[in-house]
Image (tube, rainbow over all chains, first blue to last red; front, side, top):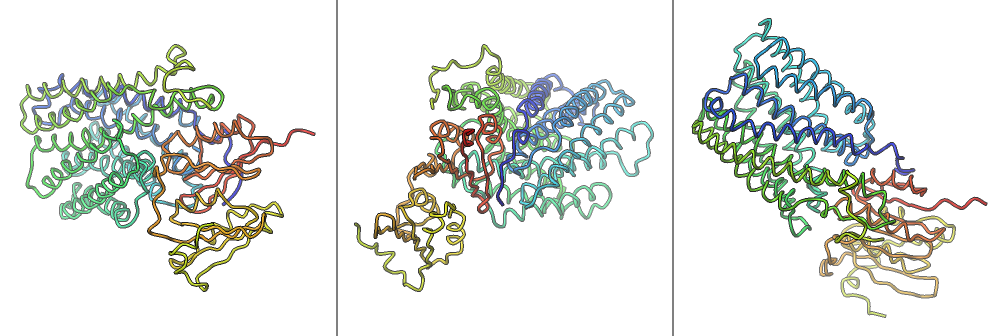
Length: 433
Length: 181
C-alpha cells in the first residue's frame, strides 16, 4: 500500500485527549480521597447510595474518561486512521463530564429522577463516542487484534451504559425481572469484563511493545485472550442474570483470557530491549500482577468458595483499583508527557534545542505515587476483606496520598503548557539539531 | 577483500536467488520494494545475490536487523555483487535497536527508526530533515505510519510518500519540493 501520508488533519489535537485525561485524574483524586471519608459505609454492605457514588466516580469519572481520552490519542497511532470527528469528540466530552458529575452527585444524595436524567446524558455521550469510533474503524483495512478488541470494548461500553440506564429507570418504575443484586452484579461484570478488559488488552497488544521496546507478541495467547472474553463475558453476564449454569464456564473462559494476557505481558517484559523501567512501566507491570489476585478472588466467588459483601468489595478493589487503575496510572505517565511534549516542543525539533521527554516528568513524585498507590490498593483490599472501618480509613489515607502524588506528577508535566513552565533552550538534557 | 565466509560457502548455487537492480537505479527507480519482496520469499537455506551499481550501505543495515549477514564483491567501479545470507553465528546488532541507524548514499539518506521509543523517531527524523540537502531524499524505515509526524512535515513544507512494505515495516520517503523555476 503506497501513497502520500495523511495530512495535518490526521492527528488529533493534543488538547482533545488531554481534556479527558486531566478530568479523569481529578476524578481519581476525588475517589481516593473519598475512601477514608466513606470508611464506615465501606465496612458495611456495598449496596449504599454513597458507595454507588464512589463506584461511579471510579468507573465513569476515572476509568471511562481515561479510556475514551486515550482512545482519541492511541487509535490514530495504532490503527493509522484519523479520528472521524474531533468536533463530535469535544462535544461528547462536555456532555459526559456534566452527565457523570450529575450521576455521582445524585447517587450521593439518593435522588433517582435526577440520576436518570444524568444517566441519559452519559448515555448520549457514550453513544457519540461509539459512533465516532465505529466510523473511524470502518476504514480499517486489516482487523488486527487491537482493532477487534477496540470494537469489542466499545460494544461492551454501549451495552453497559444501556444496562445502567435500565437500572436507573427501574429505580422509578420497577419493570426489570429477576432479583436486584444479580442484575447489579451483571452490570458490574459487563463493565469490567466487556468494556474495560478488552480495552486494556487491546492497548497492551500495540502500546506495551512500543514503550517496552519489545517484539509484538503473537501466537496462542492472542487467540485465547480474544475468544476467552468473547465467549466468557456473555456466559458470566447471562449466568448472573438468570442462567446460573453459565457462570462457572464463563468465569473459566475469562480466567483463561486473563492468564493468556499475563503470559503475553510477561513475555514482553522478558524480551524487552529497554534495560531500565521507568515508573510508568513499573505501574503497568504491577497492575498486571494485580490481575492474578483479582482473578483468583473472582474465581473463588464464581465457584462459591467465597461469598458475601466483604469478598465482593475486596474483589472490586483488586480488579478496579489494582489491575485497571494502576495500569491506567502507568499509561498516563507515558501518554500525558508525550501529548504535552508534542504540543509544546515538537514544532521546535530541529530548529532549537528542546528537552527530552524524560525531562518533563517528576520522577520523585512518580516513585512516591508508586509506593503509596500499590501499597494503598493492597491495604484497602485487605481492610475491606476484614471489614474494619479504622483499617479501611487508614488504608484509604495511604491511597489518597498516592493519588495526590500522582496528580502532582501530572501537574508538573502540564506546567510545561504554561509559558512560564517551558524549559529554556539551554536547559540541561535538551537536545540540539 | 575478505575471503568468502564459511556460512556462505555452504550455500549451493541452486540456493542462490539473483536480483539485478542496476537497470532500475539507472532509470531512477527505487528498487527497495523489489528487494524486500525477494528477501521475504527467501527460503531458510537460500541466499540473495544482489547486483547494484554501488555498495548498498543502507540496505546492509536493514537486512542485518532481519538476521542477514552479507559479503560484498566489487568487480568494477559501478558493479557490486552482494550476497545476503542467514548466519546464526553472526553477532547480533549492538544496541538492540536503541539507536537509529543512519546512512547516506548519493541523493538518498536512509534513517531506520525502528525499535525507538516514542517520540524519539519523530525527533530523529525532524533533526535529520534539517540537514537534508536540496534534492536529497530521506528514506525513513519505521514500524508504523507516523501519524503525528505528518502534520509536522506538512507544516515544514516537505513532501512525503508512505509505503507499507510488510506488517511492521513502513517506508516513508520525504523530500523538499523543487524550488519554483
